[in-house]
Length: 457
Image (tube, helix red, strand yellow):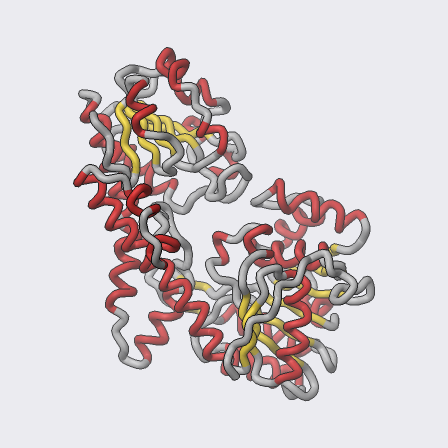
């Protein structure tokens, strides 16, 4: 069955999908699980959030989220108050509901080895307590063949039911799960796949309630598994190419953003700089594992992933170059890192490259400090002395300012006042492309920015 695009459905259309009597169990309350739980509650469903992590469940039960507080916590608190959202550590309780959504992620170690034991254990437990006519939806990205192999077989063996006849199973993966927000997930084009029409339609009705962007349907689980991995791969390859071209622009005195704005093809639309991480670090090993079992070498894919890991060294070299133009060495230089959250203007997890960047600066003898108006020292999880409580404290006597996250506040930096605090001449390295190079240099700073090779000093 070839994929077909469903028309967009607004979340406000609650009557057609959500029901006060329908409870969806969301198993796995990390990022993707809790985002689905919030969207389902907003769409009119009752939601049972389940996780083995008692500390996480305790936090959620109090209406607190470990990330995206401004988006998630109002929905959590409202849902807990009106009983639309409940929490539990019991998989048996979760498996007894009519709809079960599983968001447990595949484990991938530092060497890229893939471990499905957690997923297999969860689906075995779910299957052993599954009721007839229940719908199980896997939203976690898995390798090719895993849904119809490990997961479906585990459900059938544990339950004694036949998928497509007694119970229903579908796959609805989330691309780049580690980067999703409530808004982006609601506006994300989704894939819904199953091996039988009944499962496909039941799952499509649920996804239509929480997806504004529409979705593609398929009766080919392997094609759906391949599609989400290919999408992740293409975005990473595209990002690696953009970063490589941006580095070239820096050398030849061209502004990458200006060049990009003149391109009318798909290159102009999709070649976005993603110096921190475009996402998919845990998904791509699933693709590489499948390729290895078939003795297929994904040369371009492996190269692109390797290039993305080199970005931390490149951004440090920009800092070093900017300080050199100020007549300063990176050794003993005081460097203010502005922003840590991976999502601008909200409290989110820190960028994946933050710790590596700070450690590389320290190894070169620099003295970094970090200021983020949305994150506390506990969330940033670095030495307390590195974290500054306010912007003025962070900028006092600095030799270099690094814009690390594109918070709106940093677009409005008063450079004239900063000059009174900083140890001029001071470098300003803008990794988020918030400021105009000419304006920064006009105030006496030395500017550097990814791909923006138009600096004069």
